[in-house]
Length: 347
Image (cartoon, rainbow, N blue to C red; front, side, top):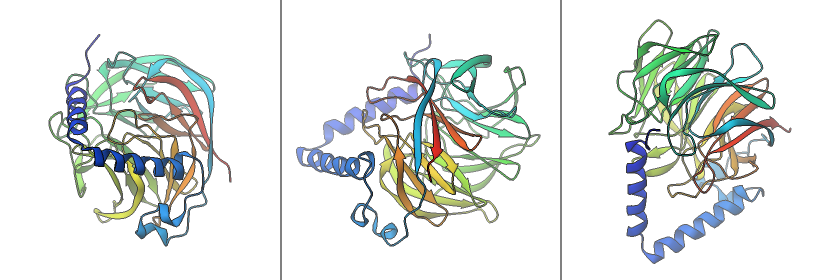
C-alpha cells in the first residue's frame, strides 16, 4: 500500500500551521461566519439578500431545486475518484481514487443502478485526476500518487486503459469540462505549485493553452452552460475561494461572474436544469465538509438548490439520463464513504 501523497501531507501541515496562528478573536469570527453559512445553506432554509454577496443580492434567484437520495453502494469506500458518463449509456465510469488508508487505487468501476462493478484497472494507481467522455470514449487526465502525473489515458471498452498522450506539465487536482468536441482542463497542481491554466484537448492532438485563470486554482467545481464554462470555488494557495468565473472558449476570456455565499473547495460540479450545481465540498479546515448544494445560472444568479443526506467533500459526479450520479467522497472525519447518490430536479 502506498502512503499519502506529498501534496496531501503538505496540505495537512499547512492547515495545522494556520490553525496555530489563529488568534482567539479570529476563531470566534470564523465560527460565527460558519454558523451563518450553515443556517443559510446547510440548514435548508431560503437564503435571504443579507446572506448573499452585494453583487448577487440584486439578481433574481435561480429556480433550480434538487433532491438527493441514496441509491446504492460502491464495493469499497473511495474519495477523489475521476468520473464520466459511460458512453454505452445508462451509467457512470469511476477511475482511481483514495481508499480508507489514503492509498491511491487503480480500479475502474461501472456504476449502473444500485451497484457498481469492477470492469478493469488503470496502468497505475492514481487519485485527483479528471475524466471526460468524448466521441464514445472515456479519457482520464493527470492525477497523482506520490507525485502528480502528466498522462492522458484512454479507457477501452473492456475497462483497461492505455496511454495516448501527455499534458504540458504534471497535474493533479484539475477539473474537466467537455464542450463542442473539446475537453477543457481547468487549473490543477504540478506537485510543487498550483496552476492557473485552461487547456483545450481533442483526440489525436496535443493540449494547448486557451485561457488563463485570474489566480492559480485547484479542486474547482466546473460545468458547461450555454456554450461557456463556469468555474466555482476551489483552492488558491491554501485559501478556499468564493469566486465564480466564466470562461468563453470563443474568445478565450475569463471574468468573474458571481461570488459564492461562502468559500468552498473540494466540491463536485455538474450542470443540470440550466445551472452549475456546486455539490458539497468544504472550507479550508479539516472537518468543515458541507451538505449544501448551490445553483449558479449563466447570468450569475446564486441560490441554494438542496442538501446532501450528509456533509461530504471530494465526491465524484457525472450526468446520467437526466440525473447526476454522485459516488464516494469524504465525511467530516476525513474518511471515505461508499455511497452512491442520485440527484434529480424537483421542479
